[in-house]
Length: 206
Image (cartoon, rainbow, N blue to C red; front, side):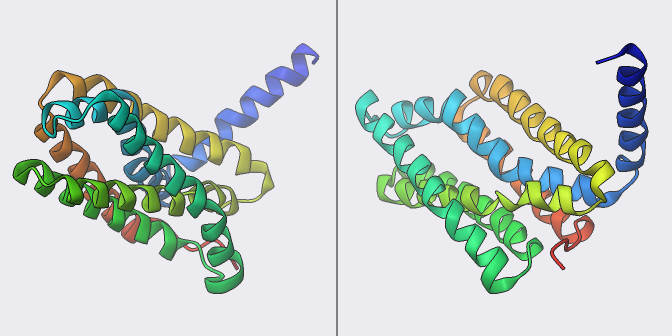
């Protein structure tokens, strides 16, 4: 790529980013995604093992099976979500809102199961979290469709930066505090995501 072409590309991306950060839709969609999948990434990679080992006294092989179950539910929900969004509801925002609601519900269930030592309820909370994760996949489409083609790539990049930045912060903080406190933090993030999607994100599938 020629230097002048590269410079124009960078200037264009900066200009697009300047417009995006002033639009509530990209914030609502990005925080919505982060409040579902960002918290799941944190749980899977940084402290889920700690919770299940210290609170429920599960062995490493059982913990791995539980985490695999979450991922499998997530994977199974992805095509279902696409079908619901494109063929049944023909809308995207309700699914992202439901994803944030289910995410918050899952953390509430996990908190209760951890305080009571109810392993069956823990499984229920993780299945719920997997379903929420599958539903969140329409967030990238909402980010892209909210703008014309000139802005779509930057919008998706913005969403990914927000999502993975939050996940990185949570992954750093969660291991430093107790598992119960980690659940509380993740619950608070999910509750914030509900409000952000409800108030700021707009429907993009016309």
